[in-house]
Image 1 (cartoon, rainbow, N blue to C red):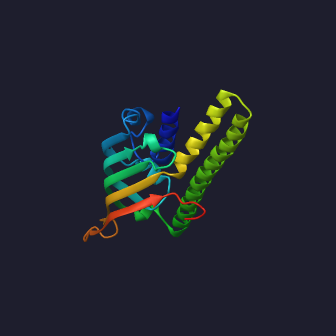
Image 2 (image 1 turned 90 degrees about the horizontal axis):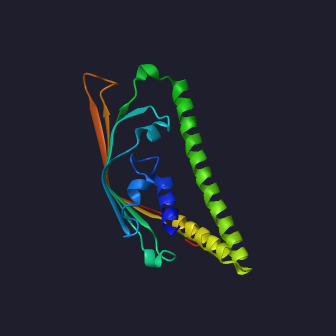
Image 3 (image 1 turned 45 degrees about the vertical axis):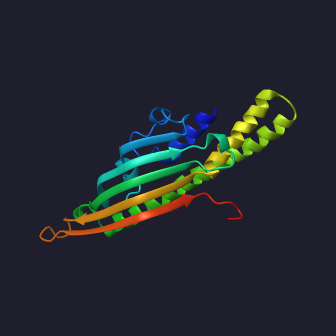
Length: 202
């Protein structure tokens, strides 16, 4: 059950963004406490859902590593290390875009991000409510109810303590559309950054 909760959390957080990231290939190393996947592709369909006036030419992840502290899962973070990310994009055909299209695209992108944030918040709130309800029922007796409360609390703990570390991210924008006679290329390299859940005290 604990393994399934962890798999659900990982696929919910990253499954839409990375091709081939499913429960099947994650479960291989989950009990060992170490999952390592290499040479993954970013899901272009997920990026296109943002409706930005760009075309993603190539998206690549060198390694995707998950470390699971099974012996201390209720007190320590599940860490996800994503390394050697390359994203190459170019502007969409300007003949297919106009100011009104861009305005609608920006609104759609903001709406998509808001919906995703809302869905995530709702899912975590449900998990917390189930955790409280399960814990209260478990106090009244019944081993099954106690287990339900424990696993609900564990699911909330995994989601709240998920730690994401990105290293060596290269974003490159190539523009040969605006001026075919003089292509422009701009790149940004991010050495590392971290994403971590916060609490009401930090």
